Length: 446
Image (cartoon, rainbow, N blue to C red):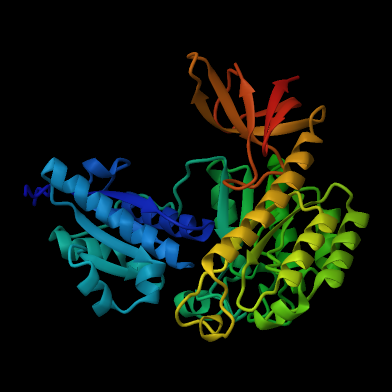
């Protein structure tokens, strides 16, 4: 097989990102490191000398997707007669031992844990034989959209019994406010108009820093940076316990903060939640939701649920459906429970057969979609500002713009289609919603 690497030329490095927004941030920073070096950033993996697959291992199917991606690249290499250097980074190397990975995937040149991704240049230098050195670039992020995710923490201390994240990403560590604000300033300086704060458990940000550090004050500081450009700010992955009065008041009183919260509740049955090592239950959650909507009637609430947890009964499944009917989430997703080796739930009694889990998860999804589609349909006739993020050529040859309103988070909540719009990425346009389909809307420019 032909070696694609010219020993004198700078290696071309491409990235494949799998999993959640937190992985997207990690890839973004690795791309920035490539741009700040003598190496070249390549968009197409078939033209790259080195391909970095930033993997997810939250669920077994995510781990399998990471492995399948590696195998697809190897198959493509074989067809093209190439010998691309492969690096597997992120959650899979953080979760599994290096010896096990080397034995299972001998074709991979290097494995880089999520915690070690800052050393990517040294790894590439070692496997290519071409030394890395810095150029004059100082950017720590690369930008491909008018929005950007900003991680405010690493790891998680929650120890939910179904989740392997604490073993993959380690204990919870807050980034300092100064470091976060510096990154927000840099992103705004490069044209970003919406900042989306993320972390495994954003509500407890700052508790490991000092008694005075808290998420509400961090949101105010970020919003202050966005005020001159009339930018947007969102917060995702907010656990229920983090929804205190100060935070709710901050969201309500700060114009730059979108009235949008993402609260992964996981279930509504108090017994199932206790087995998950989580607090709460149907009545408590409904009271919290009612309180928020009373203060902010236009608040958009997103959540996530797990169906088919070990020993979940049909009655508890029905309790979840009844709760969802009452809660009326704008957007929500459901995962079918996955038995993850190393977690406490993996060793629990009462695991449910796959057919039952699949049926229950589908029933939850169908109800969530019924509610969500109706919520989206109810926006038809409303007027709203939309930020243009992309363009799409239609079958008839026309081009429509794709944008996102304040009530939509990237990659999860649908988009706004605007036909025949002459605009650029990052432009803001005011539209009237004239039609809906599933979670997407069509906008007519005013």
